[in-house]
Amino acid sequence: MSFSTKAMVMRGAGAPEVLQPGTVELPWHPDGADVLVRLEAAAINPADLYFREYGPYVGEAEGCVLGHDGAGVVEKIGARVKGLKAGDRVAFCNGGVGGTHGTYAHHAVVPASLVAKIPDGVTAMQAAAVALVFITGWEAFKERARVRKGERVLVHGGAGGTGHIAIQIARALGARVAATVSSDEKAAIATRAGAEKIIRYRDEDFVEAAMDWTGGHGLDVVLDNAGAEVFLESIKALAPYGRLVTLMGTPGDLEDMTAYNNNLTIHNVMMLTPMWKGLAAHRRRQKRILERALDWLASGKIHVIIATTYPLSEVASAHHALQSEAGRGKIVLTMEP
Image: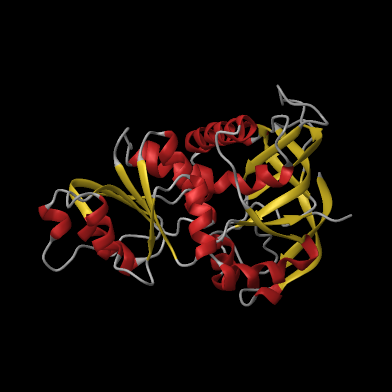
């Protein structure tokens, strides 16, 4: 059986305009363990731009529906689903890498094991906006770098979707946080998130600023969200036995082998790996991280900045906006009738 819904569908790989309105058939088995969610909001992430331009990890670009983060209301439940019912408000991170359709749609079919209930006081837009970025930040700082109380942490791109959430996670773990930004507006976002040291990377050398902030000792942890050049420069800012977490891939060491000689630990975080490689246990673990994110939103322990919203039909404009205005909160899609 299947369920028909409206979506913004890729007509091939390329510019944002390849995203066009269409209808897709979602696999729906009433006797199964999935839920059918009527989506109210979906977040846009930089990974979406990559898949749109170059094609998805799984299958062909033609017919692909992008989007990982979704939030909405349960419309139907499979017979083997327990703990959920029609009318429940839920959020999830599922699809959008090819194969399973993503959240640029009016509905999604999601395994019940990956769905988190949205607490009272949290909107669908907030829930969708926080999902991928909180999972990423938690994996980076709690599970990989194991940030401890009193440590000095630097977050690159501190005002971005991942950056402003990562700052809040590091602060919740007891760290002192510095952040790189490029403008007064972004400095305000990073400061509100909890960064005590703001480094304007266009006006000052972030390595010198970090060494000054740490009294010459060096940083304990760096989160690289910028790429090879920043990754390599960050090695210079780390203290011996420091930890460097990258979301962008590992380009190697400096010519003088600083990372090796200082016993630095390098971590890669690619939170979509469990999804596209079908790692069920890790997907359930990420669902538990999402539940924590939603609880923290409800309690006010963290906040998520939604910079702009677009109706689903204007997703191409939203992609253009992320390409030109990256680094300031999250962009969220809403599902018009």
